[in-house]
Image (cartoon, rainbow, N blue to C red; front, top):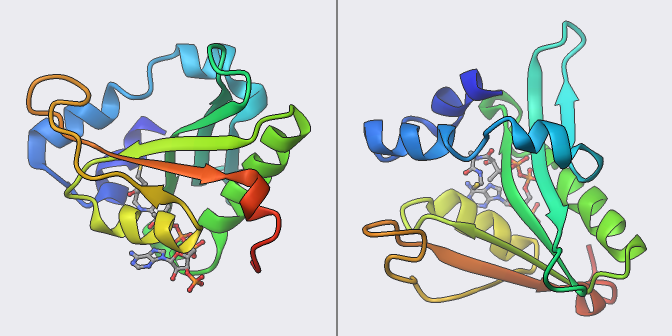
Length: 150
Ligand SMILES: CC(C)(COP(=O)(O)OP(=O)(O)OC[C@H]1O[C@@H](n2cnc3c(N)ncnc32)[C@H](O)[C@@H]1OP(=O)(O)O)[C@@H](O)C(=O)NCCC(=O)NCCS
């Protein structure tokens, strides 16, 4: 999965962005969060899409999408939406009402995607993830999502 990050994110934010993304996937996610994460592979076993998520330990009504990506060759076919829908169903089945996630302000594609899925976006939160690491935070209320047309 690490190998696809740079091509899939199109080198967003250069070397600093590449390091930020690589550091988002330490091994612990593949050890302790596999039951709430999804990987889609092509027939040959290459990665086609992934969603790494978890149920909040701190907030019993919340779930969190940590990282998501779809092969650019497969964009616009509903794969990102399908991954989120699968995660929403899982979150609901565990009694979770809210889904949270973040993105960088430069990632306008991600912001458009999350808006289409019904997420509410915050204003840009300066230094959210550390000095210079601004973020936009998204929240979706699954109770409201259940009555929204898909
Ligand atoms: C963001 C991403 C996951 C979307 O995946 P996808 O499979 O192409 O998205 P879908 O086909 O399921 O699209 C769902 C909706 O979002 C919209 N959407 C998706 N990408 C969009 C974009 N770049 N600009 C505007 N709208 C977009 C689609 O038009 C669709 O809306 P619809 O209701 O009108 O059909 C994918 O572009 C990606 O992997 N980007 C690079 C990595 C990234 O930025 N990840 C997220 C931040 S961590």
